[in-house]
Every structure is written in structure tokens, then in C-alpha cells.
Image (cartoon, rainbow, N blue to C red; front, side, top):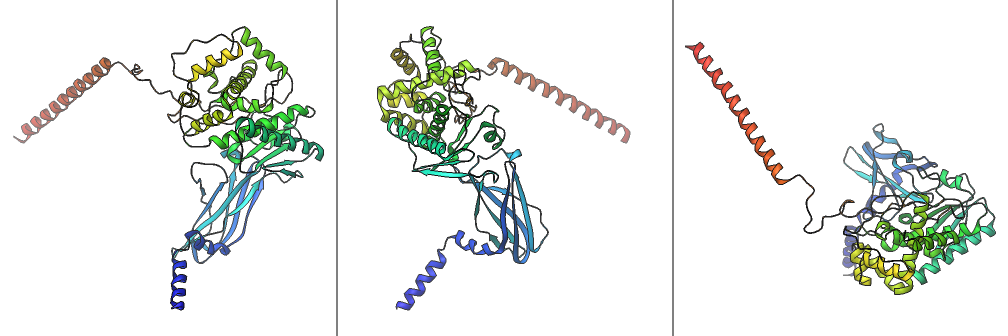
Length: 459
């Protein structure tokens, strides 16, 4: 009885072994399976694939470990010479696809079939996308890992401490926290950082990749306050990205950037003076206009950051951290900016505008008749690597997700269509019908005349 039960147990285990485990048995058939990085341009995957019969198809499956709405698998089909042992190689060119952030994890595996129909999948391997030139060192504290080179360890420790302080501030003041490690790569200067990632603006000084849990930054070379503010700012973008990640929601730029600047502490004197001047002269930008991308004009960009900070500060200090968390999760769950504000605070974006203006002593703004601006695919102005009045605030060139309606603004109920008038449409249809009828009559006449001629010849 016991032997029978054991046999049934073994049979049950065989039948219900996960398919991935069965396929992994073929892992030994991929020899010299490796990836070679030519940073920051390419990574080349190569392996010797073996089978008992001639191999007829080879596919490289690859991707990165990042937050996505579904499993994203890239596929490449390298050339090879058919045989029982084949050399397979394929190069991923970042200059064509766009660059990954340093520190990103790349995974890959080989899937191939032989002429008998047997399919083999090699074991999944990983490699870290990072240059091998610099002598990287790492300091860790809690959920923060700081990677650095070219600076002394004491300053690296100061940067780590600033980052940890920023994480603590965000958790207690804004309700933002992470349950996964975040990697910060600190370059000793801006040139080294810009050389590490392709196609970023030449003035980028810091950038966050929430989907990868990675922050990059270059040091200013002397402005310690700026350096420490930058790491806190960029970490905040990662935290916002973690909390609001979904395939439904959007986060307005004023909220994302406002939280990042708020996490740094008080505004610097130049930014505070500019904001105060805009209040007194009634030249504040509307909250609605700050929902999408900020201006690339330096003065307007700086004012946009300062206003965003002021709006977020007003919401947190007036209504508390819990409501701020509720606003972010409502946006994550797919509510529009107006809907989320109404749900959490009881007012829409125009109501927020007037309440905020009242709190800072600015005159009320007339409510706009236009629908609330929604975030569109645009790059937010990034950190300018200079301290002082002209520098603005550290920021991140992450892309604001598009709205579910493709970036357009849905028509409001009862709105007038922007298409052609109905009368013109009917007239054009009538003309087409008459024209088609006329062509038909002409063709029919030609056919009748041709038939008559043939009949005359035959007679």
C-alpha cells in the first residue's frame, strides 16, 4: 500500500512539474553561453548550441528586469549554419534601440529546435549593464545602495547619508517609501555621467529611472548642498514612480516635481524671491498649465518648480500626509486629476488653485472654461548642473505617461463637433452618387453600341 502510494506520488510530481523546469533540463546543451558588453553602445550574446539532430531554428529571448504592465520579451533571430552544433550570436545595439541606465539587469536565454521537432530552452542568465572601466565601489544602508568611484569614501558616505535622510523624510512627511532596494550611481562629474547614457540632453545633471529602481547623478565639483539635494530629489521621483505605477493612471507634473522639490527642504533664496515676486505681480502660472510639461524657458521652468513645491507644501501642511497618499493612489487607479482631487479633498483643480492662492496671499484666478489639462508625452526640464539663481531645481527627464485617450482631450458632453458640417457631407455624398450614375450610363452606352456593331457585322 505504501509502495503504491509512493508510485502515485512520483507520478503526480512528474505530471505536474512546471514546464519551465522541464525545459531547463536542456540548459547543459548551451555551451560558452555569455554576453559581452561594449559600454555604452552594445551587448553581444553568443553561445554554442548542441542537439542530437540538426538544429533548424534558433531564437534569442532577452529583456530587462523592470516594472512593466506585462512580461516583455524581446526576440532576435540570429543567422547560423544548420548542424548538430551551431554557433549563435546576436548584438543588441543601444544606439538604435535607446540606452538602458547603468546598473540595469539584462537577462537572456536561447530557444532552439531540431529537425525532429524537439525544443530546448537554455537556462536564463543575467548581466549588469555597466562599464568595466571605472573602479566602482558600493556603500549600503537599508534600502539604499550607493555606487561610486573617483571620490573619497568620506564624501560617498555623506551622499549615502543624504539619500537615507531623503527616504526617511519622504516616508514621514509624504507617505512615500520603497520596499525594494534603490541603486544610486554617483559619477564624479557631469561629463562622465552623460557619457554613460545615450541621447540625454547635454545639460542633464541627474536622472531617475523608477521602472529600474535606479538613480544617476553627476557631482557638481564643489557645491555639496546641490549634490545632496539632487540625490534626494531623484530618489523622490523613484518613490513616486513606485507608488503610482500602473497601466491606468497618470501623475500631473506639478505633483511629481512638487513632491521632489518638497523633499529637498525649503526653497533656495533666489527661487523663493522669484515666487514671491510672481505672487505680488499676479504672474503665477495656473495649476492647470503645470499638469503637463514645464516650459524650457529658464525663468518659467524655475517658477514652475517653485510653484509646484508651494502647491504640494500647501496640500501636505493643510490636509496631511494621508490625503496626499490618497491622491497619489487615486491617480494610480485611473482617476483623472479632477476626479482624484474631488474624491480626496472635495475640490477640483480650479478649486485647488483658488484655495492655494488664498493660502499664499495671491488673488483668485477665474475658473477656466476649458477641460483640465492632462499630462502628455513630454520631457520635464531637467536639472541644470550649476548652483545658484540660474540653476533651477534638480529634476528628472522621465516621460510623463500618456492618457488613456492617446494624449487628446475628450469632448465634453454637448460640445460641438470639430468635423465638417453635416450639410456639406450630404452634398458631397449626393455628388458622388450622381457622378457614379453618370459613369455607369456612359459605360452601358459603350457596351450597347459595341453589341450593335457586332450584330451588324454578323448580319
